[in-house]
Image 1 (cartoon, rainbow, N blue to C red):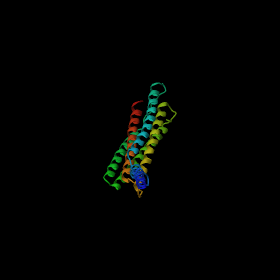
Image 2: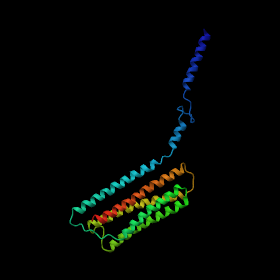
Image 3: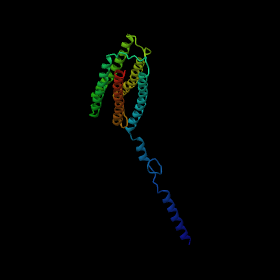
Image 4: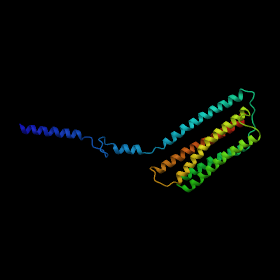
Length: 228
């Protein structure tokens, strides 16, 4: 009888031990067995985050310029003091410069995809120079208007011209800073997890912003020239 009790106790203890150990310990000592998979999932890089963040930023920019455009059109059609200014001819050069910068940026992206880092750096640097030249041409356009005695408060049309071109210039300056960041990351040597994927994601996000600024300028150019 004592032997049967002892055997029964041993069987019960064995079952309890198996019940407690049926979930094998993970590599970190956890009992869920998913520690390694969880670590891999948390460290896995997703380029979509860059793209989503950029689209959110561009949505805010779009709303800003949509509001300014609406105010521009309403003001132009609802007042007698609207006197269109003569647009500086240098704005044609500005348009050519920013269109060229989008082309050089795409050439840089193509070089990066082919693994030609030095060629990528050269074309990216040229894109930066074209962006700065665009901003310089905008300042020259302002100086030409000031030389004609046309200021922000001269009349509603001149006010909108300065506001629209100035707001676009500030946003484009942000794009130039983004290009500079890409150059600095390219010149910097060091280990980075998922380095190539992250590099491509950064370049694609800045390219999206830059091309958006290009299209936005063409839109503003036509608005200021045609809707007068």
